[in-house]
Image (cartoon, rainbow, N blue to C red; front, side, top):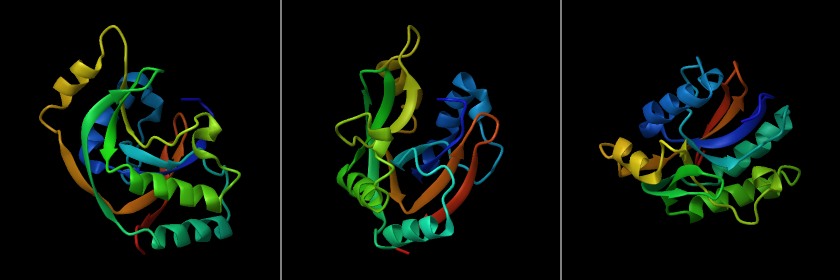
Length: 175
């Protein structure tokens, strides 16, 4: 993560907050938020987002979110991206992909993941592969929590910055 701040539109997953917050404390203690409303465990819907969204931008987000019904999701399958990011794959993927694409259509200047990838692969970041961390060790660490069955019912606008992570706004899915 860079030390410059940026905004992210994210779907919070509070059930995994203790684990994800602990991993942030291990890797990037400056990114552990003191804001009690901030949820580190999330699935990114669109990020990076606008650096300073206007009231009109926030209204546009609200319209997209209001027309997106809440949905159930299961997080159980652990996978690793080529860059070593160990993550959970949400099931189903489609509602997250649809939300991302609808937000991108509303904000074409904000391509998902800054346009670095050809495909939108929604995920919840858990850890980083290393000599001490693998998919298997992560699975063992999470065995008492998985599967996580939850409801995606809101979208948060989060500010991520070393020493300043906080919640900027939140909208319930489906209005």
